[in-house]
Image (cartoon, one colour):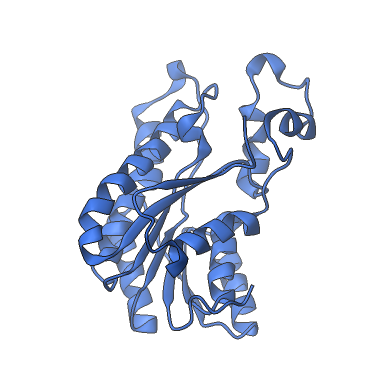
Amino acid sequence: MTTGRFTDKVALVTGGSRGIGAAVAARLAAEGAAVAIGYRGNQAAADDLVARLRADGARAFAAQADVADPEQTKALVEAAVAEFGRLDVLASCAGIEHFGALENLTPADFDRVFAVNTRGQLFAVQHAAAHLPDGGRIVLTSSVSASRAVFGHTLYASSKAAVESMVLNLSAELGKRGITVNAIAPGGTATDMAAENAAHYQHPDLAGRLSMDEWLTSHGALGRLATPAEVAAGYAFLASGDAAYMTGRTLQLDGGFF
């Protein structure tokens, strides 16, 4: 995809070293954006992605930041602006998974999950908005889990549901500047995180009875996981001028999950 929708634009992608975030960075770069890639710990993956994007003619760089720390997020935003001179798009893809029964949840679990998935995204918006021009674009990351019941998933799902309320309310504030803020709610996507946690999505009474392919066939219209590139297309849409009149909304990309 080389439409040039993001020519002369600068995008910051948090959680951009792997999975959906890496696919978003690659998609925006392929459409002309200069891309700043934020990563927490996997420098090798981030550096490899930067090298591949540069080899394809894109402007790209990576910087370390743990979005659980708002000061590190602020520094990441400022590094992107310093590197490229401006910021037009924030794609907030950093997130962590969590499964745990109610009786086993701890305050530390709550703080860890919400610090990344919820607080991290809120302050990414705050710091990015200070640099975005009128008409800028913000795309956050929710999950289909925010609107579906899964055993042991309360903490994670709640952290993502908060993001959907966040974009709804922020749209009123940021709309005064023509800045749109939306979210993507991915369904099952073929990433390392999905591979590590896929079995937890099955009902406990069915654990081990269905293969993942059988489970996907019985729970989704398309009967398969999304590729990261397919999900990244949704981020690119919301970050582009094609979505200029869409704000405060969450776009579900779940392959017809039921």
